[in-house]
Structures are given as C-alpha cells and as structure tokens.
Image (tube, rainbow, N blue to C red; front, top):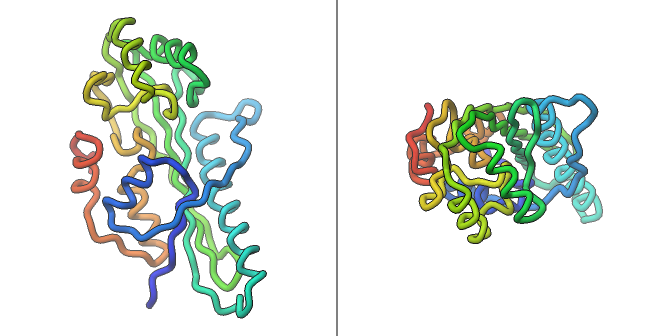
Length: 226
C-alpha cells in the first residue's frame, strides 16, 4: 500500500529538523489560526485544541485547492500533522515573547522554579477529498530551571534565540543551558515529541524507520524518555 503524503502544519525550524532526522518526506504549510486561549481553558486543553485545529485547517485548505484541479477524485491520500506548545507556570500560560523585555520577564519568572511544557500533536488523514480521522496526543514535561543570573539572561536574549520560543528559552541551548533537570520528554519541550509522532503516523499507515531514541539524543542533547 502506498504511504500517504505528509504535510507539516508548522513553519517551526525545530519541528522540521525532527522530520528531516526521521527521514519523513514532507511539505510545510502554516495554518495561521487564532491562538487566543478560551476563557478558563487549561494549558493542556489549549494545545490539544490548537494542534487539532491546525491539522484540520491545513487539510481542508489543501482539499479545497485539489478540488479546483482536474481529476481531483483521484488525488493521493495525505496526512497533516499539527502541533502546538505552551509553557505554563502555576496555571499561567507563557507563549512566545513579543519583545526582549517580555523575554526577560518570562525567564526571570521561570528561574529556579519548576514549570510544565505542554505539546500536543494532531495527525489528520484525508482521503477521497474529505477527512477520514484525526487523533491528538498531549505530551507534558515538568522542567526545573537553574538559578541563572540576570546578566546571563540578558546575554542570552541578545543572541535572539528566545524570541520564537514558548517561555523564551530552548532546552537544548548549550551556552545558556537553562535547565537544571526535567521529568518527561526533551523533544516535547522542543515542540515535537518524537515517540508520539511515530505512534500517530503508524496509526495512519505511515511507518517511520529511525527509532525515537536515535533522533532525540541527536537533536536535544538529552537521553530519550522512551
């Protein structure tokens, strides 16, 4: 049976890194949806809703484009992978910082304290011009930050690295090295829990060759949680 094509509904270079490392041929297309939390929505519920919405939005858009082509009934099946990540501390959701001041405030709030990183993955299968099924998994990791100094934070922000990351940090950043310890999935903290992705893709008929521990250790610098 022919494997379905894969579309990653994300422009994240880190998520694309994981797909390349897993040797998954893929295309990218951003969903561009409203990511505002609903009233009283928990961080885990938020990422689950957004990941699913991203997958279905991109899939529906792709179906609409295919419907304009000739012989559209004969187009190949495809999978859309949606993902979303938030950092949460004592119930407060931290997204990507809007500026350097916001990044500084986030990192100081997280310093020497535990927080949770929630990443949801959604995989939607589209066949014969319509969605066949969609499955979503939420991965939660507890991260304990080290007691870094204000000077270290300022120097890290000056690199520009925090600006496109939830919580304003990268667990894998070797110079800043913000994390003292964690319990869970380091790949999930980076935005794509590899074992969950492999599981969801296999459910939809796509088998992935590399194992999660090979990919995780290479890209995160930490041992795989599997």
